[in-house]
Length: 106
Image 1 (cartoon, one colour):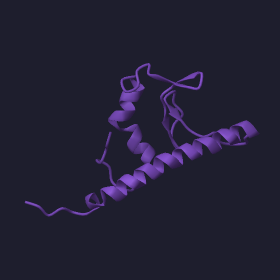
Image 2 (image 1 turned 30 degrees about the horizontal axis):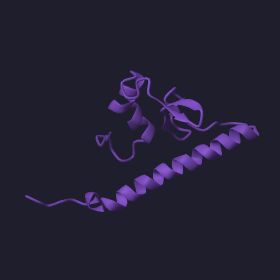
Image 3 (image 1 turned 180 degrees about the vertical axis):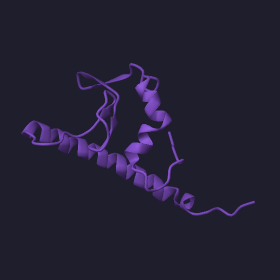
Image 4 (image 1 turned 90 degrees about the vertical axis):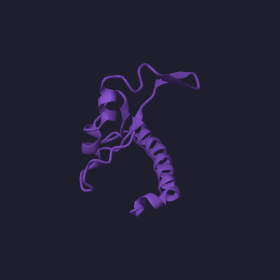
């Protein structure tokens, strides 16, 4: 899902809240009742977000405020997962670098 209709200075969360993907997720159209099994635990499919994103049943974000050791460990593991995703996007951007410049083709 790609949304390119916003100016560059608009925050990611605002773009996301106004996207078709957000609407589909809100309406249970995108992940309707899909679950995955990790070990012996059944889990819903979720999107990973940073603290600026809203907490939703389908959006996992880190805890904020005063944290105990369990919440700090959760935040650390969530951060590691988000880093994998960000590296993947970095590789995609590197692979498709030609899309960053204007293409003067007839």
